[in-house]
Length: 469
Image: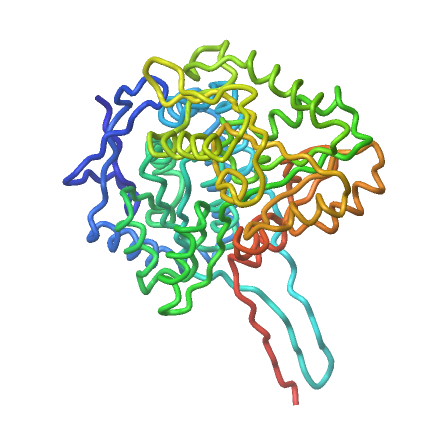
């Protein structure tokens, strides 16, 4: 059985305890991940702190290291992708795309220019300049649904800006991150990039460490609130990308045949385990029954299986807890009078599989509508007028993403602008434009990742005043 060690101060380190990681498609053991002790968490942060001054001072070294990281990832793409598939469950073609995105993200930041300083005044009397400086030690805590790309979307801009990083992956999918650490151990100077692993107490100790100056986290609202409270003691900077309960609004003039596939995959890609997946579908009365029938037919012919099988379209839920949550939400919806149009029951055999499930006959007040299911179950709700649909879409604590589907692009844009979400789309759902900031409204997040806003999150502003008199 393969064991995966921690990366601390440029060296792989074993641990006293190891945690088994389960293949969610077969329920077999994939490997064992080192569980960091609290002393090892401290050692990682201390190493990161020591490495910070030299790393922050040399942009050329940062560029070279990021470019080499991209090359190393491409050289090991197959091994990384297969490990993601085995510990997380997605089809291999999808995890290969994820790894390609990891390499591209490293490469992009290796080539990216840092924003220039801003001169407010430069005359015979005074120089006033606005500049930005790296923060120091950044803690990057990542989820289990798309483990590597969500890690690198944090660490690449943080490292590029001159920070040093301690990363902690989810305990459900730590192996691919620990393998990445092994591959990059000699790419970055010792202490610049460290990876620890473990469950809740490891992350909480990391967040509360006094030398950590910024915490960037993607995950659930519940955990995000807990991290927010923990980071408040010494006013750490925070970036939180939290859950979503994204609404999609299908207007009466939508092209039914054209929208079935993008709606289906907008809801069910990665078995619905995506923060900005479609989680509530509001459909105009005139299209409700025909669209529901087409989506149910598409769901029924979707092939579930192990991600290493090239015929597989959807893999399992990533862990047993998430499967149980999905089952519970569906059973609760049934108890409230829901109709099931596809799926609705767990298939026999090993693995945490649940088929893509279309549900009608539910409304606000039912948990499946009010809460984030984070799984392959989609409530479909009818509406008669657009104002009602907008009101229902906005009646949520969440505000990550939302979309409008219509032939009238101007009308779609106007409605999208009224939706309370950090990401809004017309005739698509889930596309992330490279270089654009990404963040949520309300409970769905705090701060932004990506683009200029993302760089600002990993730096702090300084106004320099020089008197020339």
